[in-house]
Image 1 (cartoon, helix red, strand yellow):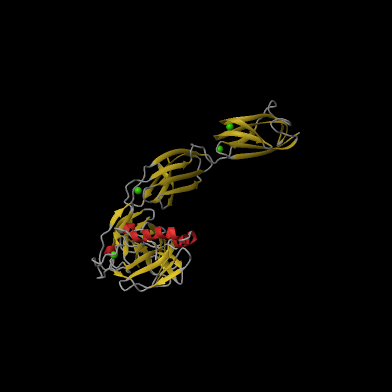
Image 2: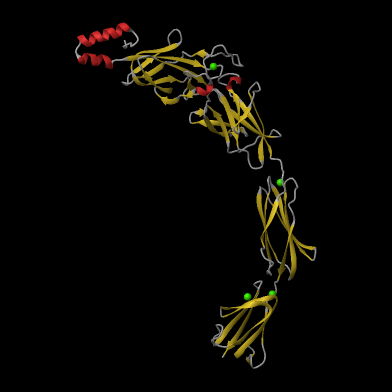
Length: 459
Ligand SMILES: [Ca+2]
Ligand SMILES: [Ca+2]
Ligand SMILES: [Ca+2]
Ligand SMILES: [Ca+2]
């Protein structure tokens, strides 16, 4: 028997022993202090997390003591205590040495298809806590307890609630392949995965099978795919439940579930996000008026819900000469095209369209095409040129281009020129502008990047 601090005669007796007995015997007696543990184990058939036999679940069940399994306790000394429930349905461990101990309560199934929870002192389901699971002669719910001389009591509930979410489109078709459906209970969120055999139905799994949820508030949260939002969330089994929204999630109370091993379902209906805004269109290229050898056009677009098309049309003197466009999707997209055109002045007009037919502002940008190579002709007159037919002692070139001459290179050495329709490069002889005795290569560049190559020989 443990030493009872509360009984006066024991305290008096102890005092007498202290006088009469040698110290070692007293120490032994103190070390042998023991306590009791009383465990009430119940099936939470009215799924509120509490033991209350006055309430009836929708399926007709009432909370009931569970005496079907042995309870085990490993005490501070490692001694195993193993017992069945008493006639009144409670499990009573007595003469347990004080100190830390582990309580093991068996699951009915292996692997477990249930959850055990500590409801000791709880006044609502938010105060219950899930028991860890350990292997000890089969799968057990395990609870750490400190045994003291006053006696300990624990109230342990069991539930087998499952929870699924059916995610559907507004027309009722399943929404398959979502990555972010989570089911919640207790203080935990469990990532849910889609049934391979039932598209659009999601449940959370653990290594031993389905996650079994603590009674209380059961929740779902979904991150819809781009362009979609949650339209409605309902829940139920054979009955429809009351669902509330809180913190971006949807919840119902497990007290509405038919019975404590049922599998209630959320139905989450997604709908397209309403289209509120016109798309945008931004000209990324060209950024200058040119001239260009060809047009490289890039138009980027965005929309609040979804693009369908980006257009860049090319006009000359108000007449459409070339239409370019891309079919696109998503909330941002890009259209690119390279267009060859005859020399001249043009305008590109660009815009984008969204899935509901809204069209962005249409914007114009002017540019010039120059696809014609510049000209280089040998200047006459002894002052400029000595020689003929490609062989010279001294040579000068007149350069011309409607889109303006930019520069020349002689044997790769570049000489920049003021950009102009007319230009020249004079008095070329070995040693000037990179020229050498023998064969020389002159390349003339216009502003658009067209080139004209001339080969000549210097003596
Ligand atoms: Ca209950
Ligand atoms: Ca839009
Ligand atoms: Ca040109
Ligand atoms: Ca230049």
